[in-house]
Length: 402
Image (tube, rainbow, N blue to C red; front, side):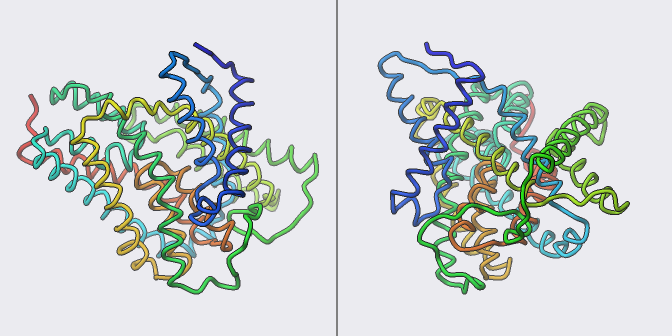
């Protein structure tokens, strides 16, 4: 057993990102299909660890940095959004929510239907639907406990974690190819495909330049720190109430209030490019730690019928993004980037969605509306809608509590 401490894990995550960067730069397939760098490097390391396991060698990482990095990323999303932009994106956000809701319904109907056909408990179909795919590990863990205690489903927790892992991997792999297929059908505004990935320059205004100084860096870091502190305090106040929200939503909300409040009173203008740089670093390190820590051997514990359900769900996600999300979002370049993002959090999580979109926009050009809509829907709406949809399916006649 090799146990890496905080510093060792940070070094390993940095090396994973450098490995991913090298792979995407040198391997034409990865570059052509817009595979995110943390996904490429993280999966290679996860596969190496899987191989080492057969020689009774195990490596464990200190994942204590993972949650702060995720929260810091969502803080930067909040600090990047102003009310004027939110107004502009209102109609688009509404349409995208319809697409997201449609996918949740399709995922659960498909999971339950396939489980019944394969002779499995319909609850397993629901667990391999929106509970773990759109919901991720957190939602999967919460609902698996309910399924075990209230409905008597055996091994619900193991199935939930393995399904969520499967979704996280596939969500990061199919977004790029889906976007590449769709971009061939549209005119990319003012941009031609670039031979090499370029450094991201911002979520909202990627071409806006301004010098980053030590003092400005500290200012931005202070805003992120305040967002984390106040967001956690707000989460603690709401805990157990009817208004309880995930911590990252509270952090994002505080970021939005900070940015717009300071601007409204003329006290401070957020340096968007610097916020974006810190957000990109946080997101990349978060994904690197998450992916290199994947226990791929857990997937081997899934029976063949569960693999079939998850494989079909992956195909359904890709087809839904191509034929539904892309079309109702306008069948243009922004719609193609949104489709890539939808693949990310339709199967995995919001950070995976952002990584998918960054991989696409680094190659083809910026999409301001995509980076506005996806974080908003992924942070504020999808968890709430998912709970409603899951409860709707649990109200069906054949889900009777034991």
